[in-house]
Figure 1 (cartoon, helix red, strand yellow):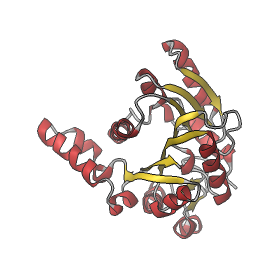
Figure 2: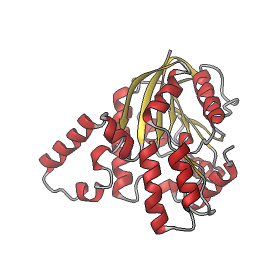
Figure 3: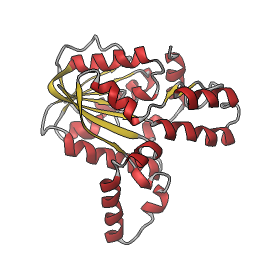
Figure 4: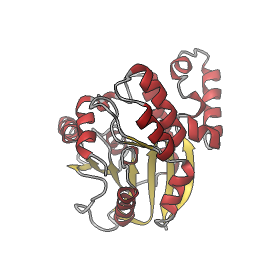
Length: 272
C-alpha cells in the first residue's frame, strides 16, 4: 500500500507552491498545460482540482470564470491555498479541502463538469488504489464530463532514478532500482526526496481509464522534445523561431517516443 504519510511529509518540505514558476522547466510545463486546458475545457463549468496542491491551476482557472473546488492530501498546501483565496478575495473558489484521491465522499455524484487529476497518479502504488481513485473520479463527474490526468511515464520515471542515484545515492540502490524497472513502483530508501512513485506506460494508463468507462480524447507529452532543454528554449531571442519551436512541440507531442521519455505526460478523456 502507498504510505500516504511519506507523501504528505515530502510535500511539507518540497516547495510545490513555486514549482511551476521557479525555473524554466516549471514555466514550460505550466504554459503547455494551460494550452491543453484551453483547448479541451468547456467554455464554462465547475472543476474539481484533485491533487491541486496550493492551487497553481485553480487560481488562473477561477480568474477565467470557472467555478473551482480544490482538494489535496497536504494540509500545508491547502492552508497556503486558503490564505491566497482569502487575500485575493476570489469567490468562485468554493472550497479548499484536505482529501485523499481514493476517497471523494465529500463530493456528490455528478457534481463536476471537469476533474483535474494532476498529481495523485504519481504516487498511487497499488492497482487497487488507482482503481478506487478512477471510480471516484467517474462518480463525481457529470455525463460527458472531461478528465485531465497527468502521469510520469514508465521510462521517464525509471531512467530518472539513475540521475537521482548520482545526486542522492542514499535514496537509490540496486534493489529499488531493479524494482522500479520491473514493476514501475519506486520506494525511496530515504525520507528525503520524492516518495512513493508510480510510473505506468501510456498504454497501461489508457487501459486503466478505458476499463472505467472513459474514452480517450488525447494522450501526449506535456513538454515534448523541449524536455530538459527549457533553459535554452527561453533564451531564444528570435520570437519567430521561438514560436516555430513551440508549434513543433505541439505537433509532435503525441508521438509515442516523446510521451514515454520526456517527463510528465497527460491523458485527456471523456466520461461515457
